Image 1 (cartoon, one colour):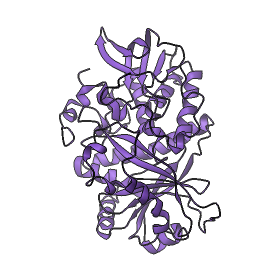
Image 2 (cartoon, helix red, strand yellow; image 1 turned 90 degrees about the horizontal axis):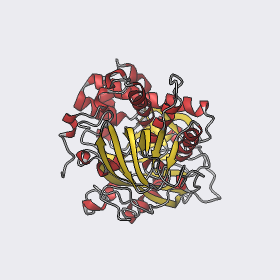
Image 3 (cartoon, rainbow, N blue to C red; image 1 turned 45 degrees about the vertical axis):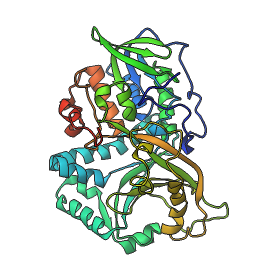
Image 4 (spheres, helix red, strand yellow; image 1 turned 180 degrees about the vertical axis):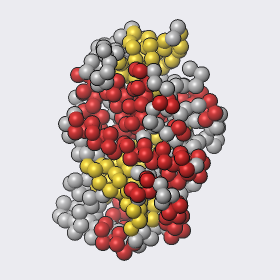
Length: 431
């Protein structure tokens, strides 16, 4: 079939996380979608599956709604199956929120980030999910003195706020002893968790089906219409009438909701899995995750695996101001790499920056791309579509809004996440 603009591309590059497909990868509950349902959820990444889980596991419901999950490709093969595999308190998001929205918004956003770790830990333990979930600390390592001082100043200016107590500054000399990192200007240490995201989502998806949900993978939604308080979803496997529809579509949202074109813009990132030489034995076990901030604009993300391999992504400076913008911006093509320069950079990072890894030969055995969504204010859009995600707790709040009719104001989400007509009026540059 011909795939319209903004839709997921077919045959994406395989990621390390997806190397062993789950039995539900291409599962369909029946040959065609049912004619109707209570709730349709488009997308089976963490947002869509977690929302379905929160709805169907809600103990307050007298009867469970009929929930249908729709996925254009195989289950969880979008951004959730292609990311860095860690979540953390992101100080740079806090700073950007402070500049644009003020002190109160920072507290809301950072509380939400901290809530993610606790909420995921709770569900992993409750459902006994084997996804290598590990609560740890993450280091935001700064290599530029000016950038380091700027970020320190932001935290110091908010030191009376409760959230700032979670952020600890580590001097360069001490950081080298803890992590083996070389030539840094210091770092923040923040709460974090690492995990195998695909294993988390597919385990939750299995639970969703046990709770009565139905799943249709490799099923494109090609058209969305509103009629008589219902959504008519035309799919590649029939027409589904849904009482309520949840768009857990991230970068692909504009494919079905054109009012989000230029508001949630898809862009391509590059990621890798590095394996050291079999004879390599690290002097220091890397038990934390990292963001390597080379300057204000550019950073890599690094997640050590339990087997001493490394997930490493970023290298945006190798293409942002060099390649034709169309090769990575406003595209949903994750079937090709952005460039070889990013991969070549990945192969140098461990030897260049971590003591003891100079002879490890930690080079890529997987390299892939993924599609992310960018908004003008760098915040997610949550709530009712005007005129018609911070993921796990967002999904929980969306479930409450859909099932119980809770207003956005009565959720515990940051006010700045709400999708409004005013935010839709401001587009990303280039639109």
